[in-house]
Amino acid sequence: MHMPGGRESAMPAEVDHPRAPSIRDVAKAAGVSHQTVSRVLNHSESIRPETRARVLEVMEQLQYRPNRAARMLVTSRSNTIGVLTSMRSQYGPARAIQAIEDAAVERGYAVVTANIAAPSDEAIRTGLAHLLDQDVEGIVIIAPQQRVFDVIERLGVRTPYMTLQSRAGDDPRGLWVDQMTGARLATAHLLDLGHQYVRHIAGPRDWLEADARMEGFMREMSDRDMPVQPPILGEWTADFGFHAGRELLRWRDCTAIFCANDAIALGVMHAARSYGLDVPGDLSVVGFDDIPEAQHLWPPLTTVAIDFAELGRRCVELLAPSEVALRTVDLTPQLVVRGSTSRPRSL
Image (cartoon, rainbow, N blue to C red; front, top):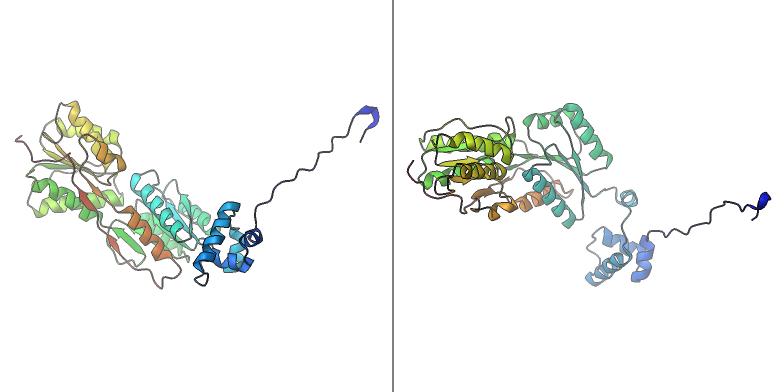
């Protein structure tokens, strides 16, 4: 079209946007009814294996993704689990979340995570509101301090939820990892090697994991009538481990150090070398968590491992709608002995 003055109109041309494939497109390509595709999506046991395989193959070819809102209208389920955490940057919680996500995918669930900046009432309410807005069917709560769980209890959340705890308790919604036993295993390993002067570098004050690991150390030392010096409380970082290690090793009054996590242990090993000390000849070091890098340190780090894959599986299992009631189960960490520990030399 020409406009006066010889200018052409600026009417935009229509653009043909490709639409996302629908459930009927999948049905047509697979040669089945759309009801059959729906049954495959809902994991119905009435579908023959060969039919299921053909439908899944077509979904992959067409890059079909079920519409979540539409499925909820039909099934009244979101197949979504929420995770509320305020400590996602730490290795243990991060691996727990990953394990939960892996286990959820295997069972046809999605995972939505809300990471709260601080364990305040307002932040917890905001995080919960975010998860509930996603129509989650259950929530896993991973938090560093007991007061977070207390706030959740006071809020009276109706959606099924469970907590990851570091101590055993009577709460039927608690899945707990026996951190105390893990710490006792680490301490016992050093004592069994013949170390009499063992120190502990703990994590932050008031953190459940740090408290449980510190208590495990103290109990094992006390039960064996060994001299106990007050643990050093601080942070979860290698920097803190280095500075705390420098302070402890200045006087050479210990032959072994049990660290609350592997990052602290890495810093302690650095501190030992800064004084020209050999690990494990002059100082044995044990960590906690068994980070992937632990086996590649020099020497490889003796540490305490947690089965995060099993932890994720149990979290999803306990929150699955087929469960009649949540039940308390426990996971016991395992000691992994590597090259950073040995019998002591005389001081």
